[in-house]
Image (cartoon, rainbow, N blue to C red; front, side, top):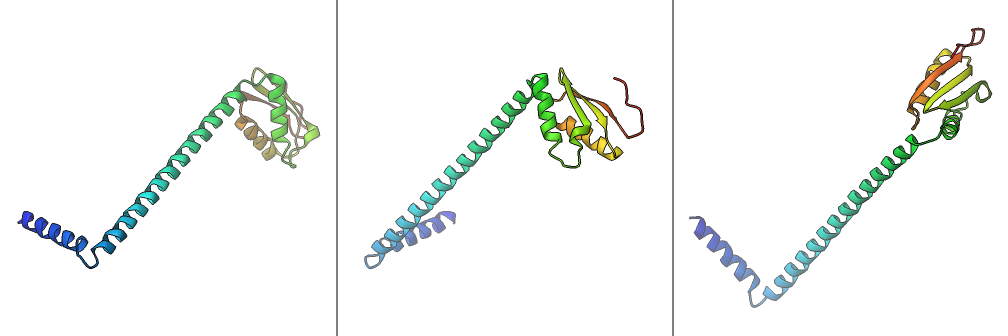
Length: 147
């Protein structure tokens, strides 16, 4: 049964493409459409390959950047923490002292708002290269914590 259906289908295709009147036109259109489909598919595969390659390169660069951040010396780490913390205008630049020793960042100074102290500590912990944060920040009127 299936053989008969396949034979009928093959016969219809042969008569469609080998028709003496319009068969040449049909073959030409089919060849053009198959060629266009092949070219579009090839371009799409190339685009996907470039996208995957660029994502891999970006991941590699981010990994390198994180590795480089871990290898910062103490002075560079302290400068990095200061530059990232003091971008926010709410953080009092002159009231906070930043020191670093073996990846541990010490924050000293007086801050007006207790929630700002928590935010400063969280931001400092997220900075690449910071192993730990020692909090010596205090509110006005409170004694400074001892290290």
